Image 1 (cartoon, rainbow, N blue to C red):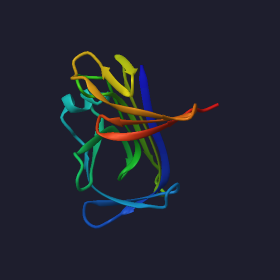
Image 2 (image 1 turned 120 degrees about the vertical axis):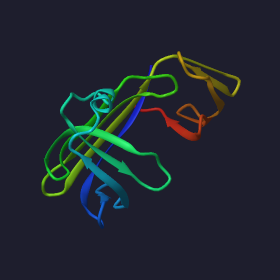
Image 3 (image 1 turned 90 degrees about the vertical axis):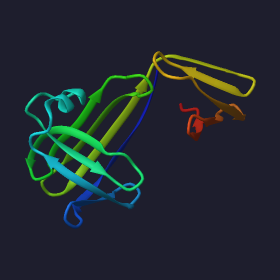
Image 4 (image 1 turned 180 degrees about the vertical axis):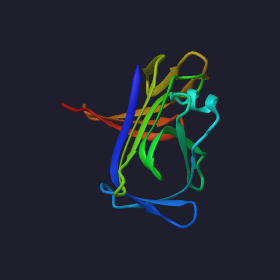
Length: 163
């Protein structure tokens, strides 16, 4: 079993007609998103994202990425608790996200991706396999006893031992 995720907070303001400007308190970077608030989305989409029939949805997109949809119950405008909670399906990880937007424009975003399967590593090469998905492989290099750099599967990660 493997999971990874992140956590961010900051402010969100309107940016043009259908745009939102998120500014992270952590990085102080600004990210622009297009968005749509769907008061009556298709029930099948809401259920697939882990929501309940009758909930609203918000879509977010930025150039170079695919559309992201979260479900929830808005408090007014985009304010509210928005989330997804989906199981692993083929090549897709189980995903849990939460975007809380306060009426004053402060946000808190959390995400976690999880998967289960097998992982094998030997002689500088690794491979991971999980039911319903093609195997992913790559290379790794140790740097002392507390760091390992793994490349493959669409990116490069430096793992550091904690504690």
